[in-house]
Image 1 (tube, rainbow, N blue to C red):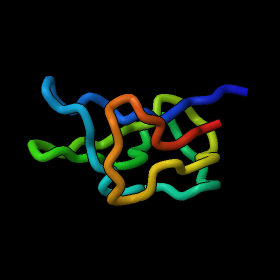
Image 2 (cartoon, rainbow, N blue to C red; image 1 turned 135 degrees about the horizontal axis):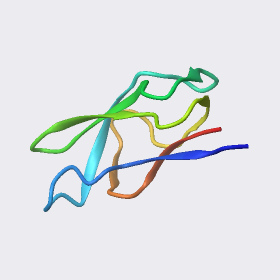
Image 3 (cartoon, rainbow, N blue to C red; image 1 turned 120 degrees about the vertical axis):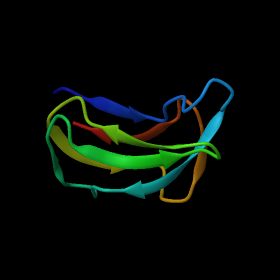
Image 4 (cartoon, one colour; image 1 turned 30 degrees about the vertical axis):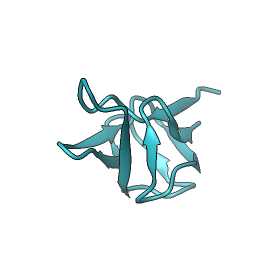
Length: 78
């Protein structure tokens, strides 16, 4: 079973954390490669996170409006 951790990206060189602004998918949804999963933001910018694999969104770990460190796992696709 292929698995992908959805990771909080480095939004800028000096940004150590970001806020998960919105999930576009919910647990149990079918995900296709390229689908936009969620949107994250920092004080400087907003970024959409696409999927790099096909699968099912198994778990949402970080909820909307939560702030987490760069590198944190936001959710899991299997």
